Image (cartoon, rainbow, N blue to C red):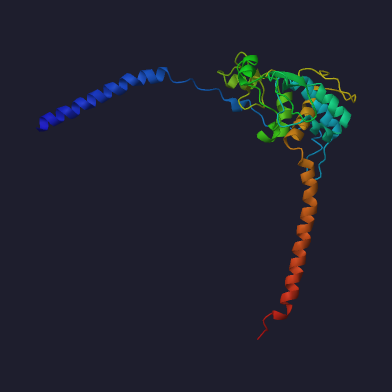
Length: 283
């Protein structure tokens, strides 16, 4: 009995060894290659020289910059990215007059319905319309962008850490990998169809550089349209689209803090007055 039990155990052991031995070479051969150290290339977002006017507790919108940023979005970014949470009428907050808002809206083509046939059609935009998507759906977006779907930009600066500086850095951060760093990561290379950007999550991004040369946009106010200037302006504009009440919230906060401070002092003095005659007598 003991001999049979020993033979069974030995047989199971041999089968187990052979089983794992047969799997081991396959697992080694098909193991995914080690990924390059993207973090060796990646850098943290930076701010433009002088920062942004809306930063800090007393920050304010620079309407001239927001209008320039809108112009960059309209002439450069809108070909691939939508602003589905922003209506044309909101442009009045940037300093545009009612007539200018109507004219801007009319320059855009938005989806509509033919009242006579009920069929889908297009029409000039109205102030009450929202900015249209450049693509009919995600399938069309992917087909036009090498299977990469361009994201909507309405809330982009809220969706990314240090969003305003991230957008600015990303737009101005295209280039080539540092050859000295690349020499230490020999398996690294930018795949075909992608572009190196040291501020992107894995430094290889599907979006081609949208802002490539100085003067790509001619500003109506005469500001010199350098790559850094255009990147900063559209980053400021996208900060506004993501949080248009940013400055108002800061301005409201100061009176609230003042009221709370006053109420705290008043409560303390009231407490001193009420309990003044009820202190325990010293023995």
